[in-house]
Amino acid sequence: MQSQEKDLSLVNNLLLNSDEIEAFRRQGFIKLKGFLSEHAIQSLKQAARSKVISARESKSAYGDSFSRLTYDLGTTDAVKNIYSSIAFRTALVTLIGHPLIMTESQSFELTPHKEGFAWHYDSLSFRYIRPLDAAFSVWIPLDPIDNSGQRGGMAYLAEDIYCAKANFQMASLLSKRMAAGVAVEDFSAHLRAVFQTPSLLTDLFEAYKTQDDFEVGDVLLFTKSMWHRSEPLLPGPLATRLAVTMRFLDWRSRLDKTMFEGESESGGGVGMGVNWGRPTQTAYGSQFIDINDGEEIRTSTYCGAVI
Image 1 (tube, rainbow, N blue to C red):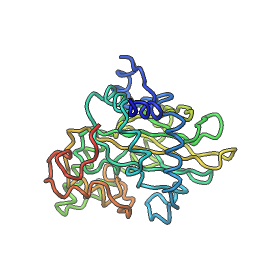
Image 2 (cartoon, helix red, strand yellow):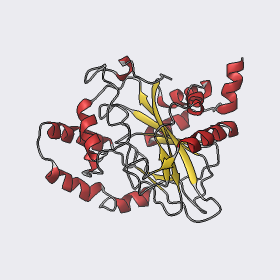
Image 3 (cartoon, rainbow, N blue to C red):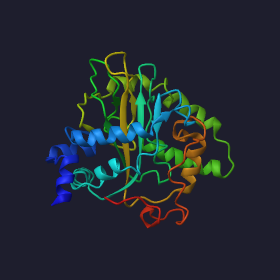
Image 4 (cartoon, helix red, strand yellow):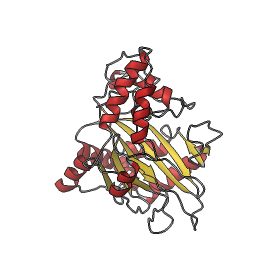
């Protein structure tokens, strides 16, 4: 009974209808309104603020994009208590259709003079699994997002319009060439012309993007292959915009060591023809030293919690 009370104080039960489930599986994203309680948001804020450091101090590849960030939230009680709650697990598994593996959690802080991420998909966060293994992110803004005001949220492209599944496949093919010592720059140059911001696709992405307002407690669940970008925070009452992201794998996901090495060398840019440089922060995926290439992640001693 006590665990149920704790659960309900963090995550609100959602009644998801068949239309919402179908729309998520078709579009690759869904806004879950009022999913987290005020208590959960305050716990995440406290945890994030205690962990975030200067992006340049962290030696992150995103030093010019965010003011402060951290990749080390997944071990905090604030995050653990949320993803292990009954209401959280029920909502995600209902939408996705199968159990998930919790991997990591990050926090990114925007200020009005920072742009955030350009158009991308979650290549770096999920570079250690096979290209078509499913994976998901839960984006939790800890401040309100008003697109008619200060903005600071995200723009995203529905997967039934365009998605990055082929980019993951391309990254896999090129990673194999790189592992064999074959140069891929000629191929990468063509990919950059199409996918790098600004590029041939940028105007199309902007024309068909979706942007939602978020109240505190609303979250966005989306797939690894959904194209998205940050929306800059404009000057105004909010001095900063803080958000937390949690990452999850399909529990049937398998280790892809070649993909991991290829995408690690480029900072997750192989499938876009971009080289952002090898990340200096601890690389999630490097810990699976006790399983072989192609084996299920869940068989590793270092696998995260299954929800």
